[in-house]
Image 1 (cartoon, rainbow over the protein chains, first blue to last red):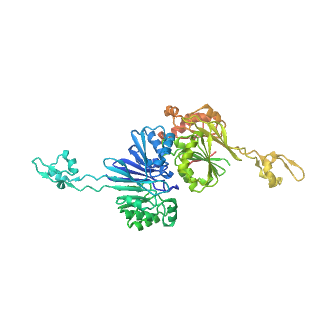
Image 2: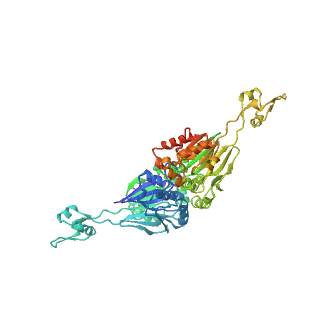
Image 3: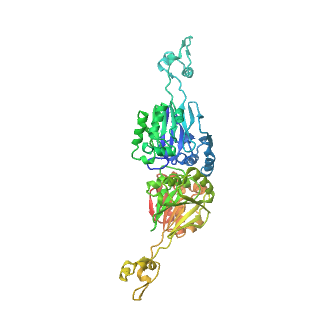
Length: 304
Length: 304
């Protein structure tokens, strides 16, 4: 259980040998969800041992090349690997037609059914299974952009092994008890649920905010999230570029996380101008957040 | 002088951690010419220390993703690096419209003038400067594809330093003498050109043939070339796949080079099924070529 965030790329648009363009893979119970797909994403999956066969959902935040240009190659490779069944791509509506043309040209012999879901810029539930939801939220960038919030559904109550044994609770009734039911013994005695179970573990939640300026609407949308990934392209010294180009400074990312009450902050989407001195980004983010901040890096895996 | 062939990628379509998709950079007197542009090409340029500012001409052989998907990102990066002047892309005509749309979406704020030249499938002179020409030739692949032949123009005769000194040839006359003129001394004596110069160094020529089946027309088109780069996707054991998918076996590549009289053969575009055992490709190519064969590999530089 829980969410595992794999960082495949956390650089900004200008490519460098230090970072790759944006890409993450969220692992939930062995199901892989990709968020953004910069050039080289498919190789990074191989490098990190993430199986193509487990990847069924790909979420694209916006239509800048450093967030999407790995997609045609990845979709082609999924076909070369003889993927079957369905693969779903979610992307801002404006890009869907062009992506269909690119796929027709560069990934034409698909072995699987590809569903492209156009996204509106705003809050919407776009994915749901029995234990996870994914929602979009509006970001504020130079082009229409969405963030994604992954939320585990409330987990079942935890069975107390000692009590289960004591009352000889049959296996057949355990699911109902985990869901909150009392237990009635063979001789008609009612054992209250609270004796048999403990509170569930808290559910994980994770929000991905890149690319965006600092914006109160974004803060509100991610309020209460467990872990926030926020872009932090520049430090204070280049705050003017952040404003010009629709990006966030590390300090603003820290502020957003603090205001949103996020329990953990990961920053990324680092400008190549900070190669060799990314500590300044961490420091400024921590000053605003008031607690330690995690730095994204290619190959890193965060349990959230 | 001469041509320097930089291998940026020499794998086939199915990506692996062993090879990158097709990309080469030909260096002629410091001017860089890219041939094919698979995903990741721009990072490989950085890795090999090849300067974006020297790259003005990009030649695309065909419209399969593993030969072209690095192009939108590269063109975008050239803009981020504030490239000025002209950049020329040459590609099969069928792909031009889609490429224009991709560039409009993913590389929209160009700082330079981008000229896209549609190529017909056949023999044509597509580039010429004072010391180099580039020609296309038809390949035989699953989709329309061209090869490229780089030819240095005949070099000037070489001045013999001892004779220049002996006859006190003034600097002002040396260009004419290199071009073949005799020299007349101050006292009217005619010194024949053959006394003053030696034959020029042979001009380099280089042909790029990928992707293609073995085909006599291709052999004829590259006849007499100095160095031939030929795809060799499969060994004999997968000759049926080569035929099915429009590719060449290593043995056929060797045969083509021998029949064309190429003085040197480089093979590449290796299927990922030969990782760890690529020597079989070399061996089979050498058996047919009758001489040592050079293996392409990422980061290798061949002087031709």
